[in-house]
Image 1 (cartoon, rainbow, N blue to C red):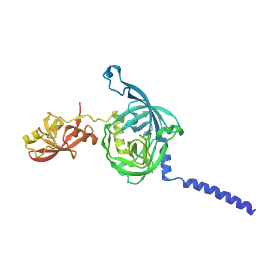
Image 2: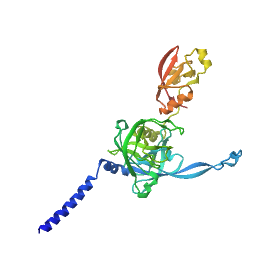
Image 3: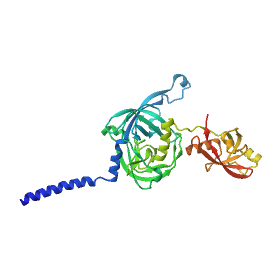
Image 4: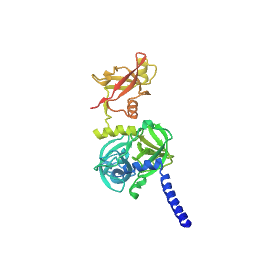
Length: 358
C-alpha cells in the first residue's frame, strides 16, 4: 500500500512539475508575441520593372525600345491596424505594384488595394475586404526608453508561407532619433529607431513592438558593412509609430500627404558681384529677387533684396538648399518654416507659410 501511495505521489509531483514548467516558460516577450501575431501579415507583390536589354550605346534605342518591362515577384510584411482591414507597410514594398496579395495567420489570402502611399516617409496604407480582424494597439514612440526590449515580427525571406504565420526576433532598442537625411531615392529617414533584433529581407513593413504588445515602429531597412539590405548584422531601423500614425491618417482620408506648396518668393545665389555691389559681409545665403502680391512671402514681410541666411536653423546657399531642408524636415502644405534674414545690416527672423500649390 505504501508503495502504491508513493508511486501516485511521484506521478502527481511529475505532472505538477510539468504544469509549472509550462507556466514558467511564459514571459512578457512570449505574451507580447501571442497578443499581436494575428495582426501581422505577409505581403506578396507583383511589380513591373524596367530592364535594359543592351549594354552598349545604341543611337536607335528610342526607335527600337532598348528597355523592356518585366514582372518581378517580391515579398514584404505588414500589420493590421483596424477591424475593417487597413494595413500599414513600407512604400518600397508595394511601389510599382501590379497586384498585392496579403496572407493572414492561418494562410488565408486577400487581394489588397493601395489606399495611399507617401514616398518621402516610405509609408503605405493598404486595405483588404474583411471584417472583425485582429489588429494591433499603437504605442507612443515619444515615450520609449533606450535599452528596453523590443520584438520584430514579419515575413523574412517569404517564410510566412511556410507555416502560415509570422516569425519573431527579439533585441533591445539600441538607438533613437537616428537621422539619415534625404536619400537619393527621395526618401527621408528621420528620427528612426535602431534595434539589434534580427531584420532581414522581407521584414520591411512589419511591426516592431514593445513587451506590452504595442506597435512602436515599422521595420524598414538594415545596415550592413556593404550598405543596405544585404543581410542582418544587428543594425536595423524602424520608422517611429508617431510618424506612422500621422501619415496613415492623411493617407486614409486623402490618399496622399500634400507636400506641394508655394511661397511667392524667388531667390538666387549670391556671387561675388552681388556681394560687392550690395556690400555684403559674405556670399552666404540667397537673395530675394521677387515677392508676389498677396503671397505668403509678402504676408511674412519678406522684401526684395532680403538675404535669407537660414531655413529652420540650417544655412542655405541656393534654392535647392531650401527645398532640401523642407524635404528633410518633412514639411507639409499649411506648415511654417522659420527664416533668418539679413536686412540693412541686421539679422531678423520671420515665419513663412508653405501655402497650397497650384
